[in-house]
Amino acid sequence: MSEQSTKRVPGASQLEAYARHAEKAGDLDRALGYFRALATAEAERPQWAFEGVRVLGVSGRKAEAAEALKAAMRRWPKALERPELKALVLAADGGAPPSAALARHAPPDEALRRPLVGDDPSRDLIAVRGERDAVVLVFTGLADRMVMPLPLFDRYLAELGLGAIYLRDRRRMGFFSGVSSLGDGYDQAISGLRGLIGDLGAKRVFTLGNSAGGMGAVSYGLDLDAEAILGFSAPIAIWAEMKAHDARAALLADRLLGKVPAERSDFRRRLGAAGRKGFVHLYFGEEMPEDRAHARAFEGIAAVRLHPIEGLAGHGALFRMAESGALRRELAERFA
Image (cartoon, rainbow, N blue to C red; front, side, top):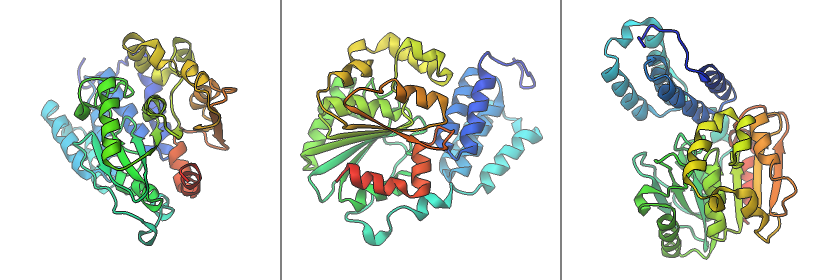
């Protein structure tokens, strides 16, 4: 397929629509994930790689945007001769950071009870000790962030004096294949996290995940006996029937269903057997059909509480709550 070809891979138009919708809703991480999926599905079309460069730049991730641009130019050295691709690069350079409202509603410096975590995008595990004997395991989404940069999100946990362990899924398997820096596989990740939790002086564990990170938050939260598990726009209904309701997750579901044992991936069964009430909290856009379908699949299970966000038609439950100021109140209540 040439650079000029307009022939589309089946499903690519829908992925592009999802990407545009996510970006319009302010969910830049999710938009980036869709553009990366398009870059894989339509590998001969340079547009998607350059869209990724643009979104990284608009997100304020300038260093990552520069590296992505270098990679794209190595593959398509004459790409910037095309005005539509050059325009994407210019947009990345001049793009504004995410909504200022995300920073406006975050806890201020004077409210923080510990130093903020520093971020290194090359690391898949970053930990910081809190002043309380409690730690939050934070499972990032496919864009390796929490909608906002990690130090900005960490303000919410630092205000509460909580320790934090930030995790990235480089293997793109919903954290079911573990975390690379903790060893090879899920069981080693659980063992490594138990040790790290002890090293941080934590006796109480909470987990939190955004988007695809919600799978890790639920699974690891159950195995680590978390007191509360929070999932934002989390695609956790991992069974074949859900593919009819959520085309976005079809490829990931196929990978998981083929490689992850059902006793681990079947959250409906695991949560139904949890024996505790209301410690898993799922936040989702009430007007977002796919996210609503995932959450409603757990309706009636005693362990699960659903938190629909009225008027939200996009994937960005975490973004909306941070932008409105609700996130600060909600985390204070759940991690009290």
